[in-house]
Image 1: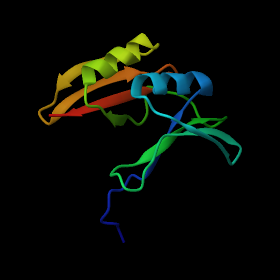
Image 2 (image 1 turned 180 degrees about the vertical axis):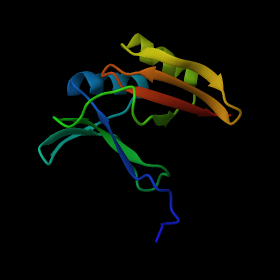
Image 3 (image 1 turned 120 degrees about the vertical axis):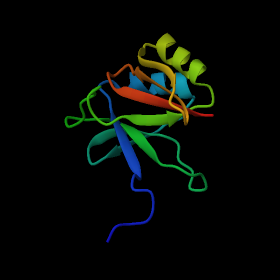
Image 4 (image 1 turned 60 degrees about the vertical axis):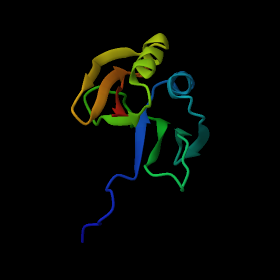
Length: 124
């Protein structure tokens, strides 16, 4: 039987250099991370609060984790897409898809320091 809730509950972003990735995501989004070793995999958990809507995830470093621009695309919500794209590029990221109005909101994509495609969404 299919659930009637939102289907995605967690994500992991592959990284090659955990410290570099933490510095990047902290600089771009001001996230604080909690480091864990789960099943012998180095993880840095994104913030999560049960009382807030949405999901959370982790940066993950291990043999099975390969950064890529060709896989699943994760969208991070932002209140100022221009500022977030500027922070991403000034901290080693590259613009992959410039800010665009898709009719629902503003979207854009960048490559993080690890080689992953990361998308942004700013509501109208």
